[in-house]
Image (cartoon, rainbow, N blue to C red; front, side, top):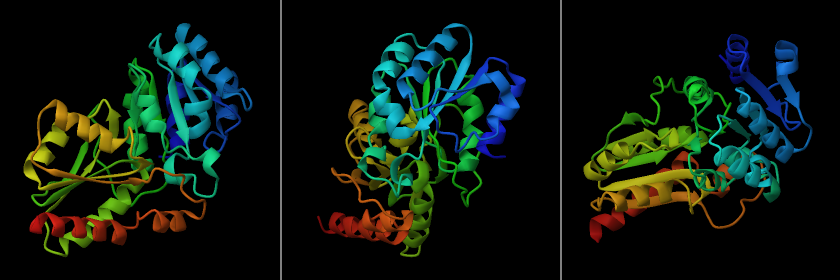
Length: 304
């Protein structure tokens, strides 16, 4: 099932659902015909769209709003924070082409701080599925919950069949004694391939698809930190406020300090536009590059 098929099917069963977009119809092209007046395109007006969504939510509706991730999270931030967040309304924010998926666009179109921005809003839930299979398994739970939520929409086809989603829980792919890879979103598949390369080097490698970044599965992070020598956070997001920050906060809060933590994230600069394969290569996110960085770090640990 595709993302569009899922939300149309869900909306046809639940008349409370309203599908909205700020002239970003790439994933919702068939919604107008299927939903009629329950599809609303406000034009390139993300702030207006979020304000309208809040008003609809106050009247018992469940708005699912669509816009490019940077414009949704930044241009409409005050409206999300004030109209949706403070009132704790069940508005579901769908951010399209987040992170490196905005490959061919310039810095204005890159959502590489969206996780940090959204998780800073009290009560806002934040999710980042690994691929379309993961996305459609997570969304029914997200949409039916009473909380506002931001979802990094990843409709790319994956090569892994995911487990059913349990609210707030990470997906434990494997456990490792030497190291554990913690990842979310599009880079899951790169991490999965890197795990195979590392295992060929004789290492015991864990892999966790974090899925839910707020609420976060602190138990999964703590268990990995206690059982592995090295934790590696992998994310197409600036280091500040993302998964590396989440892991650091969790370990500090629970006073867990055994494992080293290696962050593999976007540097504190804008990534250069290009084809997705070029962006992955430039930013060091290919499976080979990820594995190489980890092996170098492990050799330092061994001789420290």
